[in-house]
Image (cartoon, rainbow, N blue to C red; front, side):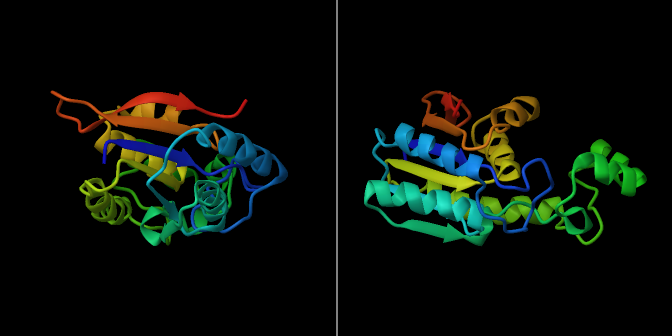
Length: 199
């Protein structure tokens, strides 16, 4: 695999919330973003397309796959983190309803688990197990992955040598596409070579 394209799903009506494993469809704005993304990626040859199985990612992946004459492979491993009692809430709501927990999460999100949420270590392990296998597939030249912001941030930091702050900004737009290419002579097998988002 020589090129990895990381794609954040388009917007839903739960945009701005801790959506997690909630399963909303794309909003009207999200459908417009999807059409723009289709136009951008229509010029790119994709060998394989992988996606979270949640509806907002799946609809995007299936539309992109159809345009390239390939089949999207769905994976639970690419789901967003499950946020437990925080699911569907905005950050200001979380700070109001769970002030102490919100502060602990800000200080050490990797070790503090919100009530009934998925531990961060489990979240990263399930992603790594799958992605390590996919990245070793030499029969695939260009792999596209449609997923969620939390997953994108982890992938950028772990596989592309991007720091946490940059990963936060790079993944901030819905329907963003991050083009990552192999770089010779570095410790990181991939590096972000191009970013794109609608609008």
